[in-house]
Amino acid sequence: MTDELKVAARIAGMLSDPCRLQMLQSLTWGPCSVAELVELTGSSQSNVSNHLRNLRDHSLVEAEKIGRLVFYRVSSPAVAEVISSLSWAATGSANATTMQTPEPLRTARACYDHLAGDVGVRVFKGLVKHGGLTEAKFPWAEVEMGPNAEAVFGRLGVDLAKLELNNGYRRLAFGCPDWSEQGQSHIGGHIGAFLFKHFLAQGWLQTAASRAVKVTESGKRALGWLIGTSEG
Image (cartoon, rainbow, N blue to C red):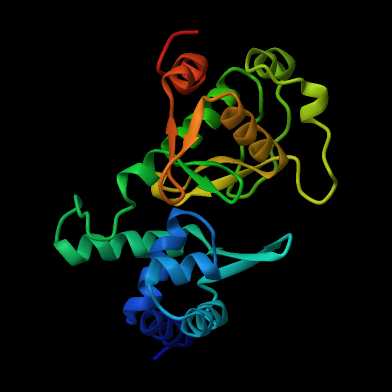
């Protein structure tokens, strides 16, 4: 048996535990803290922490400290694809629902402190299309201001000078992989957090159950040109 097969077998062993598999499924929806994973799995904190340690040791998850909290996320698109493939195998259909992201979370949700899901991906695409931001060349790649940034962000009621003020501890913007959208990216970093907070403050988005977010009627009107629900 080759070394690669031995590693693959150990990874498969990690996925054989229902609690670890549920944790990985949850992490494909977005990063979670230990407390969130405890709530989602119904397991004890010590059990969740032990599972996370094993998953990190096998390079299936990564950790990032933000403030006082540590958030965990799947380590690569390959891991997310394996989790998605298992849902297909569980039902024998590409239309599997057993392990798929719940519809409200798939549509729009919070990822750390920025907007994810279908709406988050479309916001990013719209900003790129209108020249507000540059594309992310690969997962977690840096994103810069586009040639029309002042006009595009101004249309959203955002002062570009204030937007570009960063507190120095995080990147300005990057493409954050959105596993529920087949690895397409939404906006992470300072700009992603700024826009999410701004959209909430304007009443264009409303937080719902868990991490789900709803686009309000005023949000559909204000963001339609950006997310493709109206012309402009």
